[in-house]
Amino acid sequence: MDDMKERFKIIPEVFLLLVKDGQILLMRRFQTGWEDGKYGLPGGHGEEGESMKEGAAREALEEIGVFARPEELEFVLTQHRWNPEPGNPHARVGFYFVPKEFTGEPHNAEPEKCDDVRFFPLDALPSNAIDHVRAAIEAYKVGERYNEHNWEKRV
Image 1 (cartoon, rainbow, N blue to C red):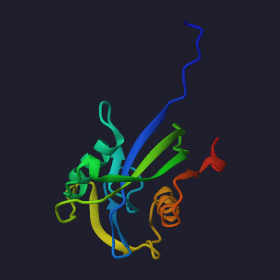
Image 2 (cartoon, helix red, strand yellow; image 1 turned 90 degrees about the vertical axis):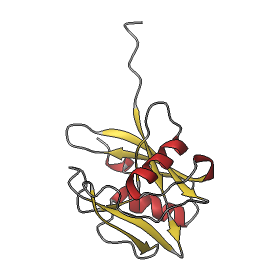
Image 3 (cartoon, rainbow, N blue to C red; image 1 turned 135 degrees about the horizontal axis):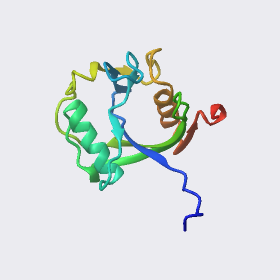
């Protein structure tokens, strides 16, 4: 088996689309070392041993203090994207969910990583939204279930 080629690896990501009255909740990254000063969605990496729904529910609680049961998360989009990170280009797959129900008032539960949490109109996202987040929201708005982002730029 030593001559077997190592398999291609993809990093899983989970995101929550919290939409209310035509607006979507976004968070501005702060002191993270990646896309700081730009708006993104509550979310992060899927972790070993959890389903993507469990990961999205975990991230929602950690980042915005909202409790959503995994079974109450509706899958809306998969985004396959190329991340051209200098020195470490790689692929990621994001799973996007909308909570059917949740408890708690969204707030900044990680002030060391985020310096603003607020709702923006779906049709007027901030100019400093993270590119793949903007692409995912646009795909969601038109009912796309699968989106590819940055594949034309891969190395």
